[in-house]
Length: 321
Image 1: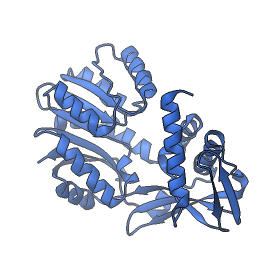
Image 2 (image 1 turned 60 degrees about the horizontal axis):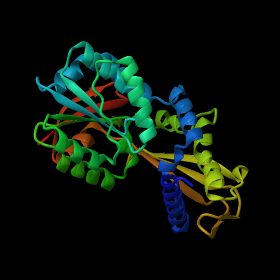
Image 3 (image 1 turned 90 degrees about the horizontal axis):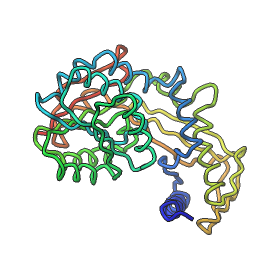
């Protein structure tokens, strides 16, 4: 077995055992994204109910001039994207910045080397003049290495409401750590989903065609395939909730009956009660004043909010204080 894949599988098994041994069972959402999960998530982004990607796409399309004006220091800067993925939305900004002859280099950050290679090849084909340097590291290590390479001001992109996957405590800790590896003059542009009609939010995570359900259940199929588990997929269902007070949308897999599941890779059997939930993911929504409070607590000040036409989503620009 490939060494890196072997390490990943060991970590996968370790994380699954930790989650399924907990008093309140959980599975890490980081394992949603295998080849099948990636394809299903592309379908989710295309759903009429899933507004998040469309809103951020609209913001970048309609406010790219204002965004460039707000972030451009008037000299060379480094555009650093945390969790770059396929760069779907970012390409709007890259194309516009190049047309406006902004003096910048692009540094996509991702833990997947394959994803970065694919992105760089695509960008080289589409934008031959764009300088692209892949950073195949965890976020904070990538930023520390970039600090050693180049003194230019950084504009860090953290898009797609990724911060919504963190609890409030983890969100504060993340931004505090990010602040420490940033330098005076650096900026941060975060995509954050806003609180809105609870029905609108819940439909985005529980579509009538069952695509979101299949996305969650795919993790059980992956565990069967990669960890030697014996989950019977038909014995599980998808259940989302939304709390308008906390802004937390949570998704669970529910055991449809009392059952035991064995997993070869962990060497354990796990018992589930009838209707027992397994927590899969959190997606937290914010108000603008909550975003400003989070920025203030973590060493930033809000420079500008860029919202879509319905005020569903914001790309919030922060300066390091």
